[in-house]
Length: 199
Image (tube, rainbow, N blue to C red; front, side):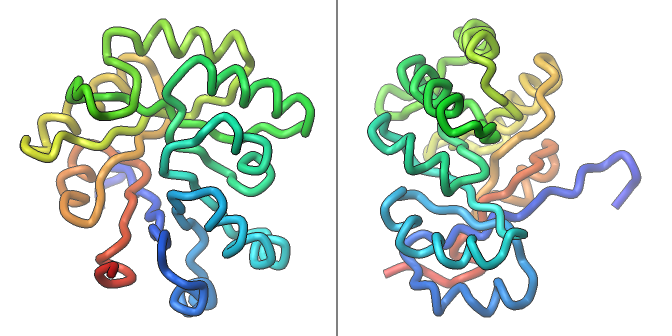
């Protein structure tokens, strides 16, 4: 890898897998893991995280406002900040708990009506709103449209990252991570390529 290229971190997406399936990877020394559901993560990771402070847990699924309090105690990164109500709730709860969780703004890069995320045209406005709330926005995240070449979305996300001077870019999964790397992704969310296919 050339000096100017980014070496992305791999988030091992462990959602739905039992902890005994994940333990060999933890013992090997891998540190970053991704979960979709807050309750599943609490049951699976609370004990392990209290015994291993190197583990970094990423919430990659939708976060409901009523789960913010418990999420901030467990997760080091939240990849799915996608509305003002959630931003306000995270801000309030962080002040109470004296925490500063690393946050990604989820961008609806394909402008899909069925998907969560901030529309590209509203990204700057939303980012400024988050800064006013003193949120620690480290980067942006996307899930490309399923019926489109992911390189189109990755290219647009890379442009937004540079334009707005974000440090991190969360994009790329098992099927498209090689393309994501070409467009400077800094966090890859890899599940089935590591743990095998889910039931």
